[in-house]
Length: 437
Image (cartoon, rainbow, N blue to C red; front, side):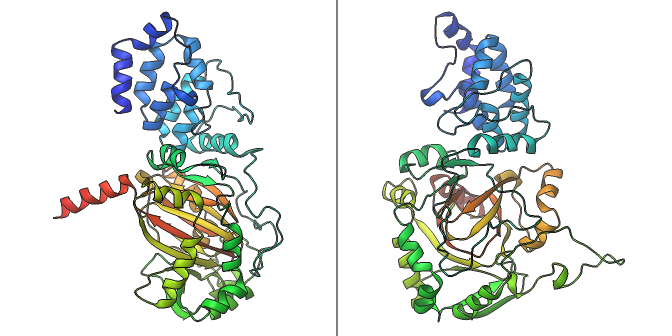
């Protein structure tokens, strides 16, 4: 049943007004305080949200706009922002403007009326992250960095402040809730401490000395833009690359791009690319090399619990691929998109930029240069929704099918990604296959 159908019935049959007159709850809520306006926000139904609001008494509308629904811990307006529906978010903001009080919750968001999609997104960030018990990664202030030199705060000069503009959950999130709240509606989520239960095993496996002792002879391909076919790549041993990473600067600096009088960018001393920003992101395929298969098996044996349980329950169909990643501060992946993926960070810290499918784009520009040139703000000036989130060691980040994303390593980062088949993604691929046949 679609949101449009539900809302049309509500408006044309005057069901909301009739229910209120009959003594129904003023919130007209489903379980977990999920209101009718939450439903419309989930599907971006701006005009229908206005129609429903017109059909309801003012105090009922105000109550729904204030309600923080448990599944996403967001108000309807914040939910629309998180889903990338700017028009719907603006409509809900207009409804809330005339004297509507700010939402109340154990961690209340600030309620300055937003003037843009990004300001709306920042209110989502405040509501789900400020003061949250899940803010610290699984590593917390843990000094153990696996020998990868990830000490420090992992921010550096010129880097955007830490925080998260997507939903945040803790390690207690079960597979059924993960499926209902995020897989089905295709919403990204950060699981703080999401590796609980597999954290110790992952650290032991991917600590520098242990990794190189077992897998140092693995041949890998590295480059400044791993997803771009046009970017230069180099093939070398994992042990050789690890030594280059260890010698890379530990402090990330993102300062505005400076050019000379001819408009040319300076070389490496002014932020140009160097070996220190080459990134390793390798798909592990057992058929291609035995060492690939061994590392793949050991990583999958320590998969985050929510991934393992989701596969067992068939909420996720299967693992399409497992990819190992390693890179120094300033390295990472440029904007791209693909099937859904569960991204596990074992050491370090990463800054994610995520775009809903309608705004997703590919880029061949290395992510360090893209950030340094103001890439996020450029996207927003184009009218695209860009949500940002900092992932810490021990965190797991779920990216739904075809959500665009760029990843910047703020510290030397070690982790792995698992691309997974979802019902939504499988259906989309089947449709594409039919259209191309």
